[in-house]
Amino acid sequence: MNKARSIATFSAVFLGALVYGPVASASNSNPVDVNAIRLEGDFNGDGLGDLIITTGSGSYEYTGLSTGGFTPNVWFNTDLPKNSVSYAVGDFNGDKCSDLIITTGYGSFEYTGNGPTCNNTGTGFTANVWSRPDLTLNNVAYGGNVGVNDGFSEGGAVGDFNGDGCSDLIITTAQGSFEYTGNGPTCNNTGTGFTANVWSRTDLTLGNAIFTVGDYNADGVSDVLISTASGTYEYAGQKAGGFQANVWTDTSLPWIGAGLGFWPADYNGDGATDFLVMTSSGTSEFVAAGGGGFNVAWTDSSLYYYNTIDAGWNWNAAFCQGDFNGDDIADVLITTSQGTFLYEGNSAGGFYANQWTNASMSLGNVNFAPNDFLGNGLTDIMVTTAAGSSEYEGGFFTIVWQDAALTLGSVSYY
Ligand SMILES: [Ca+2]
Ligand SMILES: [Ca+2]
Ligand SMILES: [Ca+2]
Ligand SMILES: [Ca+2]
Image 1: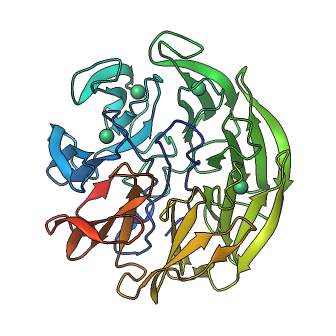
Image 2 (image 1 turned 120 degrees about the horizontal axis):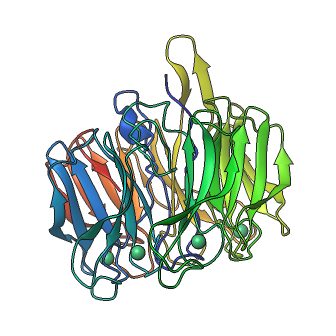
């Protein structure tokens, strides 16, 4: 059974080059990648987006190059093959180099990114800065999870919920959801690892709530939309920790384990995070209206979730946000059975449709991993199909790197 997923994202107004976005794909034959929630990393802190590439052989750090392509295998670990590991990305220690929460059957482990400008000026990662052997794969969600067993990884989130410049976690388990705030030399807590249980909600257990991150009220502190069977509730992050509850509510947007998906980004470029939400009725753009509320600015009833007796919930479109034209207004790639269509964000709300199209990139046959790999302010995309992976430069969508071995279903990107 396919599950609708929250795609944790927030715009580039936080955390420098960290632009969070989803993999946009949907296919029953590729369930893990379908539900990937990836947060874009710059692990070595040079301003160019990097990747963790996970295949059957292990996990590999590829660092982006300004001319396209990557420096491969800056770090690798053959004990972390695809389907036995998930990654959540954030800058948990606040040194502007992206870090990882690595989750396996042995628990969850914080690995902090190293680079010339990071706290550790080496390469690769500093291992086990924080570890929790009890938080094992499929028993915990950080929003960035790619669960091996779909349906058990909903929940969790990464954002800067206390606004101190260090990424924080909402950790969701069978016991509930818990805010852990990142520690580092420039954070509110100058130690390492996390300050546990700054906020907790024992009712928001794994599989019963999803979190969608954004700065919806544009105060520089990450907020969350919490969706449960009762509806969707905006909780505004507080600098002292915790959240102001129910800043905005919409009981017409319930999450019952499926049938609801969010793609947040600043689609009108005013600095406040907006979101696309897909329901069984279609997809709508909710534009932040100040103070935390939203106005519906655009709807397309042809992009929707549907329920089937045999296959459960499914969807007829997938979305991938980014600033593909570099105008500081978020755009979205919409993938349907007819191909992929670039909708460019409009400052007045809504989109300029079909600014780029590709009929061969159809739903179920393509995966997108967005990041500014070239570091020039335009979101580039790693496009993965049965023919392999191709790095498309933002803007003109020209191919600047390819690897035919990294085929759809054989690789996950973080
Ligand atoms: Ca980099
Ligand atoms: Ca870091
Ligand atoms: Ca923080
Ligand atoms: Ca906005």
